[in-house]
Length: 282
Image 1 (cartoon, rainbow, N blue to C red):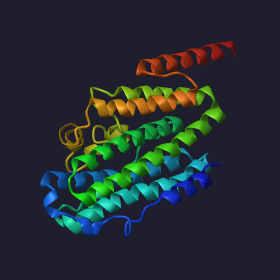
Image 2 (image 1 turned 30 degrees about the vertical axis):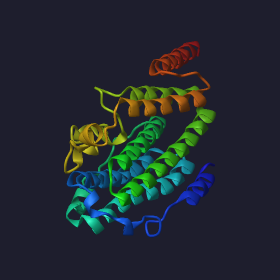
Image 3 (image 1 turned 90 degrees about the horizontal axis):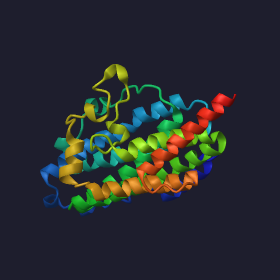
Image 4 (image 1 turned 135 degrees about the vertical axis):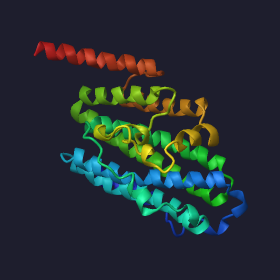
């Protein structure tokens, strides 16, 4: 069981909303209107950990270890929303999201294979880590810079926890787990239409299409692309860091040299062919 050790590791790194955020250092003239608007959208997006947790618990009923870990992940992700809400409450109360705006991102996701979802969120944590680092650089106001640095470090630790569960899945399920991780890895490292993929901008509820992404339910559904492209300038070099991290971790996990997405795609096809031969022989 991984949960007790992961709990202890995250507990030791946990920061306090009351004592580890330097609220007294706020500099009003260093927060622009444009920047403040993005904080509202990020707060609502972080609130979507609620439906994601409901999905994880539903689809992982057979795995009490991972489900217990969700208690820690959910707590820390909701604290990300809370610290951004507190920032707005203190310094821009006119932009504080309403309860209705927060509740709008809580909707039922379609059931999905647990291993694919695990890999999807692992990649999401890697990408969020880099997004928030860039956000900290884009902002000039010292308190929100500090907050984004705290959140980025949390997301990196969450990625490490997901990776441990991925390693456990390979030990238990072998090539079945490798295939699931490689399939989603190709998707998340390749992008789609030049768009960086993250769990919050993927369609997750067929019956509600096209209003079935977290981003589509925000007060400003188009904010994420503008935030990435025009504000924090998450450019190709930044994306290469994310893709490189995905490939490095999968290389270690699979014990395979994976330097490019093409290498990963080739390995995925190899696993599929091996599974086909095995099925034909039975």
